[in-house]
Amino acid sequence: MKQDIHPNYQKVVFLDTSTGFKFLSGSTKGSAETTEWEDGNTYPLLKVEISSDSHPFYTGKQKLNDVGGRVDRFKKKYNL
Image (cartoon, rainbow, N blue to C red):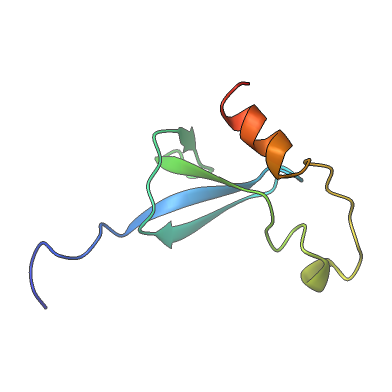
C-alpha cells in the first residue's frame, strides 16, 4: 500500500438524534465534537438521524421521527 494517501481510520461514537442511542464503531469520518465512552476514553461524536435503533426495518415498527423537512433542517443548522 502507498503511504499517506489513505484517510485516518479511527473509532468514533455515533449518536442517533431521534432516540438518543449511542454506539461505538470505526470510521474515517471525523468530528470536532467529542464524547466520553463507557470505557473512559474520549472519541469523536457523529450525529445521525437514523440508526438500527430507529429504522423500521430493524425495529419492526414505524416510529414517527418529527425532525422537520429540508428547509427546517437547513434553518436549524445555520441558525436562521
